[in-house]
Image: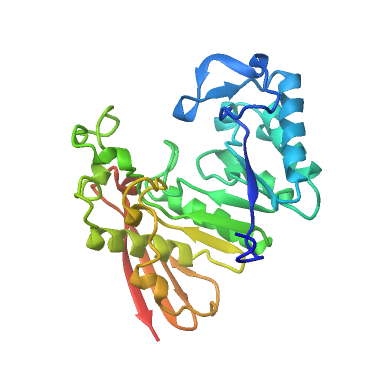
Length: 314
């Protein structure tokens, strides 16, 4: 990729919470927790083991120094046991381990991670003091102590603050996750939120389409997601939009580059976004955009959030 485009960046993915099964990197069984698993059934690290933390840090630093590496992307950095102010999020063994990698990596490589999150107290804002940027996901999710629209509002606020501080913003604007596995007709659509072994209601119309692209549904999703992104976009902001990162079936599920909106002129922003209640607007050289965020009855669609969008080209 770098031969085709020298600006291409390659970052080493390093998960701070769970072991992804890579062989030949010195993992010991004592580094893993017993009886608990994380996302995808992966074994969780035992952060109370100092040998595990030292191994994790040493390997991350080694990879950050490779000639082919432009930096380290650290995932799953939250210490969930500290939510609701149960403990000091900045001083957990896991947080100190993550910070040590960020500060120990060479100055000429990027430290970016799954850092800023509206899902926990404080949004993980303390990481902006040493990180070069943050990945944003689940931007519409609101935990129980937030109102329905708070998730996306706080996500946008955190992204704007990061941009003001010259940080890289990697924004995932996806409003649903409808992977290829849900194309299996044996999966019936869920009857209620939280039901297991079924296809989420928010995937209806996006899966089991016999390969036919649901263009109107994709365009509606993209209009809302793009309008949200344009409210936070700055020089070092990057957006990602899809209905699933799963590239093993229809390309339209993960690649939206063919959509008409991607080929419209934008130009430089003419100022920051304007906010009135839950309505945002912003002007660019070739486009003015407005979105009024709202709660919907379709509970599982982007956590029940939608928006009325207006694009004006000029």
